Length: 316
Ligand code: ADP
Image (cartoon, rainbow, N blue to C red; front, top):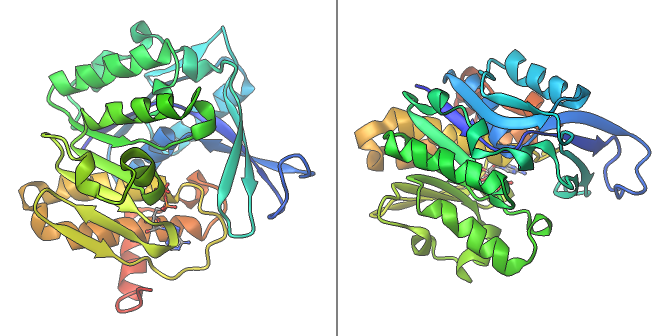
């Protein structure tokens, strides 16, 4: 079943050493990044037809990203190349616990300059799911392009999926971040938030506070502690799988893609399959945490099934 992912596509520069600041690091590895793009690749590995809509610079990094998506089986007919700005860069700090902080080069970057008229609406039509995040909502004209795309998707009956993916230092202030992140909940049927995002958005830990009339399922991720999945009637807690985490970059995106995939496959029996979908998504996240980088680490469906069959009774 086909999914279109909309948003930022950028280069992550990851230090070769853990536990050093970006300023102190001597060497960086170049990797494709951007949460919606990672989700597109992850869905492609799960055997879904995935299309990516976004904009990079008409520069060597932009073309490298286009090739990376294409090599992963993602349709890039709707990827634009800007003449006005360069591809976004993010330098990623790896702390000893393999958590991440970021420094972004986007003043502005090509993804931020995507306009509503740059959106390939014809590639949204006829798809099953539209997935997006909040980073493309931060500034104009990207915000208008995002809203035009998601509204088109909604009007054409696509299932809407949203990962707010808070990057506080990209927003002008906390109020703007809060208001911006909230927008997506009004559209989405499928949502993933981290526990920190839930706390920032609601001031607490009640996932139901983020439910809107059209919301079907909302997942709250807790990193190495696992996740909780909520529907309007039910909630399940899924413990994480114990793995040797070397780099959690992309774990949330792998989880998101597996969640979308699980929801599509469950169809009407979503409530009955909540725990199973949660295990599938947590396995995808756990596998991703064991390999450096995001895209190289995103698992195939077969890898997840293999991991789950070995992990029976082995959850942390
Ligand atoms: P995000 O904050 O982007 O939502 P998380 O870091 O919470 O993403 O990871 C998403 C999911 O991936 C978690 O819910 C968990 O199931 C799995 N995961 C992440 N980190 C680990 C880890 N260190 N060990 C095992 N599973 C992990």
